[in-house]
Length: 300
Image 1: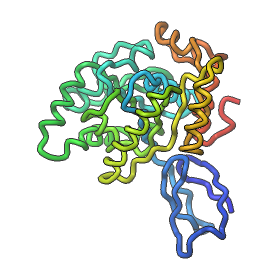
Image 2: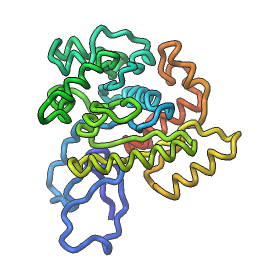
Image 3: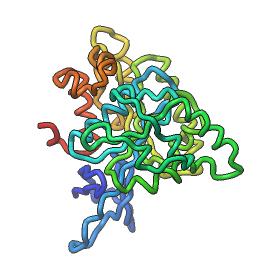
Image 4: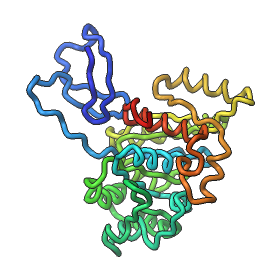
C-alpha cells in the first residue's frame, strides 16, 4: 500500500503484511511527522503545519551557514514562505544575503523590539531573523533562568511562526545554551558533514549529545545527513561517503559537490542561485530542496 505523509507529501511504499496488528499511527521517515495510518475515505486532509528545521553539527567548517541559507533561499524560490533564523554570534547569514540588519533575534527574545522591527525581508518569500555578537547576552539570559531556559527560543518563535511554511534555523559550532534551545524548538535536523575523517568523529559525538536531548524531547529527530565538499579528484572523500551510507543509509542525502562558486557568492551578497544558477552548487542545493519538500517537480 502507498502512504503519503500529510506534512511533507513524501510517498512511502508499505508492505501491509509487516504492519503490526492494531497499529494506528505511522511516522514519516523523511520529516519525522506522525499521522494516522488509516484515515476514513471522507476525512479532510490535515493542513500542513510549519516545518521547523535546524541545520546543526558541533563542528565548524562543514557548510552549516551555506546550507541553511541555500536551503531557505531554495524553498523561497519554490514558492514557500520561509523564515531563516540565525543563532550564531558570527551573524554570517545576513552577510551571505548581503544585508546589514539593525536588529534581529536578540531584540525579539528580549522583547526590546516587536517582530515587525526584528524580522527583515531578504528576498521574495524569504525573511531573516539575524544573529550576531549580541546573542552572547541571550546565552547569559538563558543561563540565569532558574528553570525553562531551554524553552527561551520556543517562547520567542512560536507566536510568529504561523506566518511561514518553513522555519530554518542556523546554529553555531560547538554546544552552547542556544544550540540546546534550537534542539528544543525544531522537529527536524539536517547535519552537514564535510567528507573528512575528523568530521565523522564530530558526527558521532553530536549524535551522543542529541540522544541526551531526546530523553527530554523525543520530538526532535535527525532526518538528513548532508555530505559536503565532495571532491571527485580526491580518493578519500569517496571512502568516507561510502562509510556514511553504510552507517546511516537513507538518511544520507545527495552530496554537495565542492564548488568554488559557493565560497565566492557571499562576497557579492548573493545566494548561489543568483550568483551562479548553473553551477554544481546551485544544482546540488536544488536537489536538497526537492528531497525535503518531497516534490520532484520543482525547478523543472
